[in-house]
Length: 256
Image (tube, rainbow, N blue to C red; front, side, top):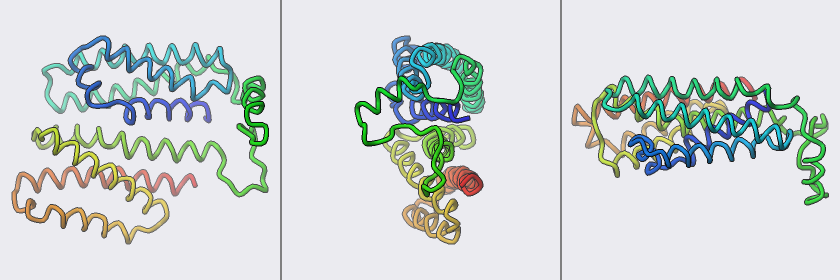
């Protein structure tokens, strides 16, 4: 499970954190260089995520994952052209599901869930006083196991940054309202910070404070809420973001 969580983190970082709007627009326009650039990014991140488990095996695994990513994204971009927002939402969810299947399908190429001693020895020579990787956490240390740390990272990456893309797709589908680029970027930034705060509040069992966050957001848009179109748009975005944050926070409470 640790290996899968590592490559899943790499996928989420590459797809939602390091992929800018310019690259997304170029991919949607069918630019081959954009798909290849993104594929190289995914390949590099995937290799970095699992190289401690064997350099050669990690290389072949990362290359296959990168190639699969390019093919799936190219197919999605081609199928999305001229389609309605609802179809694009479905293709986005299908694309992400197929990416996860690709990560699992190529996983037999990776060795057992034990770091390569040669790679660990290399890092220990660089920093001999600091243990880089531990196959087992001593019971005396009051720290989270690596697997739980990765689950926290995956949850935040998926809900906060992946949730931004998902929310925008749902808004486009339900409201059919095309926002200006500046407004869309600002709304996405607010949504990211909102989900970051809400997930943390739910995870630490501070549900009562959630209302203050939502109230503060509503006060900032108080005048605009008099317009029905904006009010519906606002409610769809807020409720979608809140649901993602609630489920992510409850999941974190379960695993921690």
